[in-house]
Length: 125
Image (cartoon, rainbow, N blue to C red; front, side, top):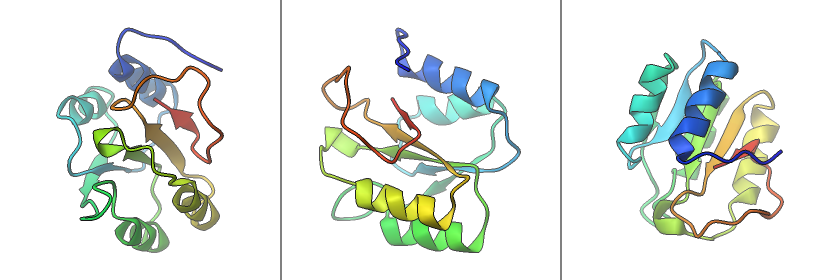
């Protein structure tokens, strides 16, 4: 399903409100400041995670360690500076370790694509 809105934050808010969970979402430490505000407004708990010095996206080792030791509701994976690197191997590892986790692949910094490539993410913004 493809959903259009004027702002991705509206889609994110609607998603968080319609899929209420008490669990925590992981957000990258370099996230746009509007995103934590959306989580606050939706009353969805979250925590920040450091980014990788090489990819500038979520640190893969830290994430895999976190989800191995604790149950999370979701991960917001932001493609910093619009990177088009292939992170599907990482997203698949997350799903193997924690199949119930919701993965949001935030491609907002990228050039818009209306027919995105196949991904292991549950949602693409």
